Amino acid sequence: MGMSKMKVKIPPGVDTGSQLRSVGHGEAGVQGGESGDLYVVIHVKDHEFFDRDGDNLYCVMPIKFTLATLGGSIEVPTLGGKASLKIPEGTQTGTVFRLRGHGMPQLRHRSEKGDQLVKVEVMVPKKLVSEQRRILEEFAIACGDTDQPSEGAGFLKKTKRFFERK
Image (cartoon, one colour):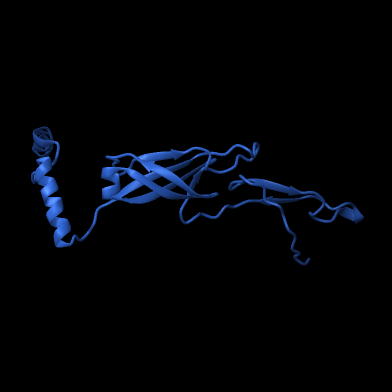
């Protein structure tokens, strides 16, 4: 029995495990009867940028530490192109932002879409030129930063208790 090719229309929003039915394209019927139906089971390949959970999409976006500190906006890739995402000042690594309606189309209600969730990772520069270092050191002094963690005495007490338990 030879293999033959056929085109199958994939509706928006299908996910791994979804089954599509093509009427009359299955095995030939017994004793000249009508051909049965062909069922195609979908397996969706992973995407290099997006992860999917149902109708929602997830991605990670690196942002510069100056942007995280001062605030601003970035362009984020979406399925429909690029979207602008506002980054409030003082944004921390791991903060998740929601872009409503930028996820996957819903299989049953194609006009509705899930959301895209964007997790930001603050990128710290690995090298600074001398002028950048000088300015950053002045900033640290102006903030009252020392070599100790920013939580001060409370953090040090917790750390001491942790090591005392060992």
